Length: 91
Image (cartoon, rainbow, N blue to C red; front, side, top):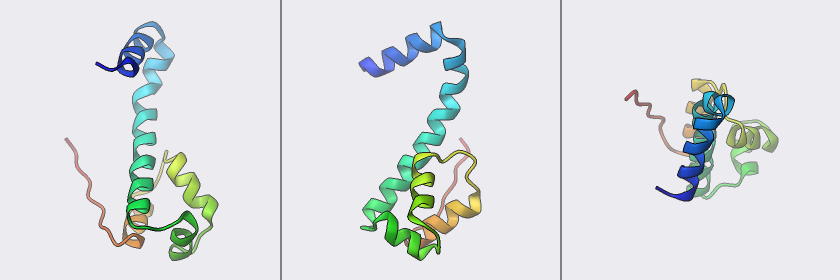
């Protein structure tokens, strides 16, 4: 177990508010990271992707950094603009 994992485990045990919000916050963060990685792998800047989606660079930044409450339709448009497809899994 890494130091970060140990810290998170200890913090969750000692801080109920942190524990309550950690998992959902992590999932939002992870979605944004995945979207950013997909954009970078496609060789696009935020500005280039924004142009493809007819939006502003700040909207792309917001999606990548704060992906909470993002609509599935937005995720699909994001993926399509990158030449990818959206695949969801419930495990």
